[in-house]
Image 1 (cartoon, rainbow, N blue to C red):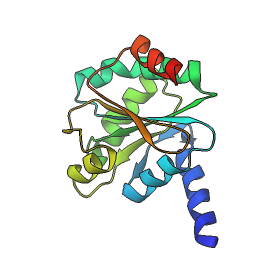
Image 2 (spheres, rainbow, N blue to C red):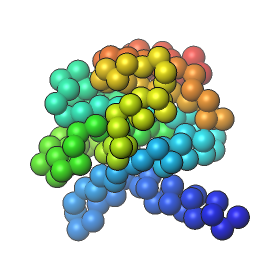
Image 3 (cartoon, one colour):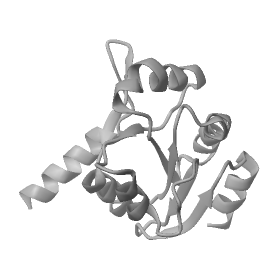
Image 4 (cartoon, rainbow, N blue to C red):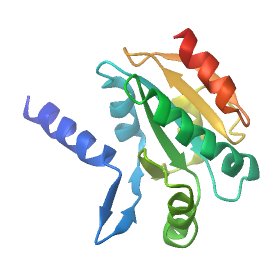
Length: 161
C-alpha cells in the first residue's frame, strides 16, 4: 500500500510541467515511470509522443500537439519524451519548448538503451521519429502512428475515440 502511494505521489509530481524560479523543468523518465503513467490513466486517454530537437518533422509537428492538447485536455493527457541527450535539455530542449509554449509534460529519456523504449512502446515501431502512441483509459495501446501527423489527423483519431 505504501509503495503504491509513493508511486502515485511520484507520478503526480513527475507529471507537473513545472517552472522553478521562472525556469522550465524537464524531468527524465525511465521504463518504470513510463509504465506507471500509461497504466494509471484515470478517466483520460493518453497520447505519448517521442521526438527530438534535431528531428525536423518532430519540431514541425509539435505546434499541432499543443493545439490538440488545448482542444481536448478534458479527455486527453499528452506527454512528450525527448530522445535528445540529457545534457542537451538546457541548451536545446527547453528553449524549443519555451518558444512554442508547451502546456503538457515533457520528459527526456533516461532509458539505458533506445531499444528498451522502443520495445516498451511497440514491437511494430522501428524507432523512427516522431513516434506517437495512444492509450485508452485502461492503459491499453489503441493506436500507433509513425512519422509527422497533422492536427486534423490527430483530431480525427481523438474524435473516433
